[in-house]
Amino acid sequence: MRNVMVAGLCLALAACGGDFSNDDLEFLNALPRREDLAAKLPAKSAGRSGGGQVTRPSALVVRLGEPSKLMGDTEETGRAFNASVDALLSLLEDIRSQPPTTREPDRRVWGPYRDPRHAGHDVRFVMTRAALNFDYRLEYRKTGADEAGWWAFLSGTFEADAGIRKGVGSLHLDVERAQQEGLPANDVAALRRLDIHYQTKALPTRVELAFTPRDGAFPVARYTYREAQDSLGEMQFLMPGQDLVPGGLLEDLSLTTRWSPDGRGMAVLDVLSGDIRGAKYTECWDGQGRVTFTARSWDFFNPTEGERATCPDFSALDG
Image (cartoon, rainbow, N blue to C red; front, top):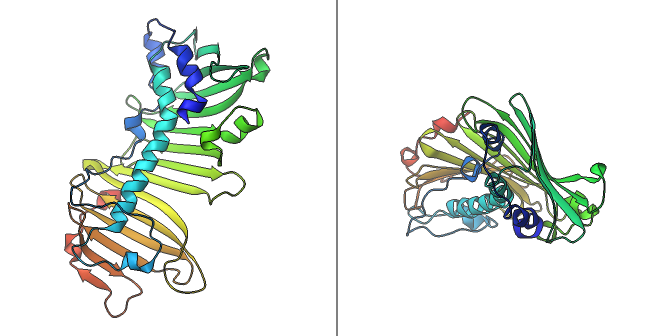
């Protein structure tokens, strides 16, 4: 996405130079950085194997000491989550590296420039400030159009709180508008839009990604990452249309996974709809990703295995 959609502005900025004012830095600190929004996954142990989507009931019938498939799912999802964050924030990192072209008391502009990657288009980046609230937009227009011709491909907001870069913000990628305006968006053509909402002012911090498909290509997908004190992490995402148990209906699942920096963790799988709606599966694993405890609410004969005491304390993420 970055190479296709924003490289034009990045190439134009590469020819710029100059110094930053203290006021410039206040604007730039309103732009999120990767370390503010990325999911901090536990270090992968040599004994841990990756997972795949939970699509069969056998995935929830694991023996103690086996690798946790749900942790593998979360690691894969976490990497995809971070890749999506990177795709948007890479542009902001390039903006941050160059001083603005235009300075006004509560406005900064980078550009406009001819877009070398999209013939016939101009590109600019605009930030405005009102007290502690910032708005920013990556804008395009057809070359030769007037001021009214600018439209936003990427837009964002940030409400600052105490401390540098701490607060509440959002980013929005309007792929549908890009397609309407004739700007190529092949890398994200299956989307209508991508939205990120985040809060970093208090623990646990929270980052949510929402992918809205074009023409119903896939269900709306949401992924939420939270981080508490002591680097405790949590990832939650929906898994619609899974064939979890034999029957006439598919199951929509919600998976919440929590982990500590040493790799120990716990997953809770809630069945939201389908043949066993309301069922719940819980699993815990050690620092090597090996299952130490399981609980299946629908299993009356053998509902739990292992010791629940092996599950880490994640109470800092409750509420």
